[in-house]
Image (cartoon, rainbow over all chains, first blue to last red; front, top):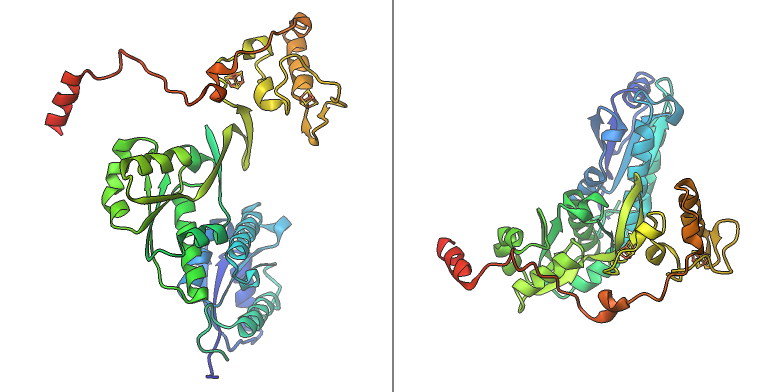
Length: 138
Length: 234
Ligand code: SF4
Ligand code: SF4
C-alpha cells in the first residue's frame, strides 16, 4: 500500500458553486485530496462526456457542484447538471463500474461547509474504491 | 424518423470482447436526433468502454467516427479505411447503417450498437413515440390522421375493441387507446360517420408480411451506359 492521494475532479459553476469554494477557503477549511477544480460557467455546461473523460484520464471520482436547484443563477442549469450526472451514473452501472464515483452537489454562496463536504464524500468514495482498475491504493 | 436505443454497455462490451481494434461509427441523421448514435453518443460510448476496459484491465484500441448518413454508401466511403483497418466495426446507426457497412465489406465484421425500434416522432424533448409500421398502403385519411396499425396494440381496422376503457388500451393501461384518439379526431373533423364504416380486411402483401420490399423508380435508375460513365469519372 503506497501513500496515494485520491485523484478527484470537480466541475464547479462560477456562480454559487465557486462562491461556496471561496467561502470554504476563507473559513480555512482544507482537504488533503488532490482535487482538480474545473470552473464552468454553469453546471448546465457540464457534459456527460466531460465526466467520463475525467474518469478515463485517471480521476478516481468526479463531482459536479452547482447552485441550489431553485436558486440557480441560470434558473435550470443545476437541474441539467443533475440530469447529466444521473445519465453518466446509469452508463457506469451498465458498464459494471461503481456509480458512486460520480456525484452532484448543490450549494448556496454562503454555504462554507458545502465544498469541503463534497470533497470529503468523494475522498471517502475514492479511498473505498481505489483507482479504477486497481493499481496503487491508499 | 427511425428511432433507436443504445444497447446496454455491458452487452456491447461483451460483443466486442474478442477483438483488439474496434472502430465505432455513428450517424448524424435519425439516430442523432433521437440521441442514440450521433457524435455525442459515439464519444460517450467510446469513453465509457475505455473506462470499462481500464477497470477490467483489458487492452483494446477503440476509435469513434461519425458519418452524415450511414445508410448511404457514399458517406461510408469517408470512413472506409478506419472500418477496414479494425477487427470489428460497431455501428451506432440504426440497423440500416450497420447493414449497409456489412453489405459493402462482407468479410468484415460489423456489429449493432443500437437496438432499432420504430418509425416514430419526437413528442417532447427526450420522448419519442411510434406512429407508423410501414404497412405499404397508408389509410390514415380514413382514421383522422392517426394510424391504427401502429398505435393500436391489435392493429385493428375497425376499432375500438371491447377492451378499450377510459381512453386506455386494455393491453397496457399506461397506453392511450388508438381508437379513442381516432374517435376524438374524427369528431373534431365532423367526420364521425367514418367510425361506422366497416373497413374490409387489409391486403398485407404490401407490408413486411409480403416478404422483403424493394421499391424502384425506373426514371431515377442509371442505365448501364450511365453507370459506366460515372465509374469513369470516379
Ligand atoms: S397506415 Fe400503414 S403507412 Fe399509414 S401510418 Fe399506418 S402503418 Fe404507416
Ligand atoms: S383498447 Fe384500443 S388500442 Fe388497445 S387494443 Fe383495443 S382498440 Fe386497440
